[in-house]
Figure 1 (cartoon, rainbow, N blue to C red):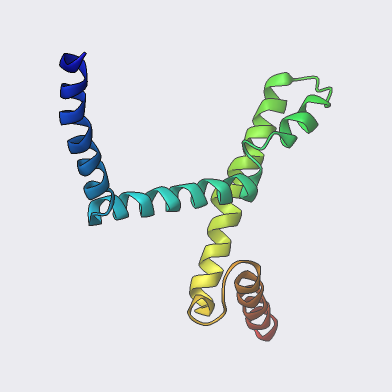
Figure 2: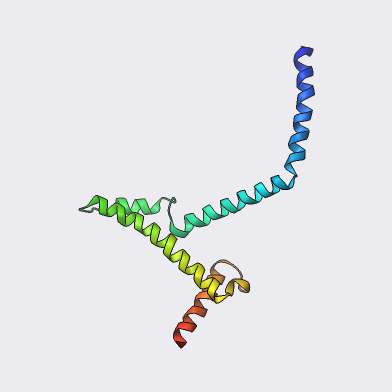
Length: 124
């Protein structure tokens, strides 16, 4: 019995010590920060264009198209338009207006930048 317990006693405390010490290093902190950024990005991406959420396929499935390939292309195109065009244009308006420097986050930031853009367009 001691032949089993002694090696475990020798290895487990050392292993726990390594885990606890390495959990509080700058590398571990950076890894955790990257993980949070990735998680936030994915969750925002899902709600940005609904891809992966599952409600768009339900709506697409109810369609009765003559050409199923065309229907699939339309479904794919919606995600592409939203992600590449709408999100890029929103980001450009926010950056060009410089509202990201002063106006908070999220909807408030986007609304402030769009208000600026519409005022500029109205005076042109």
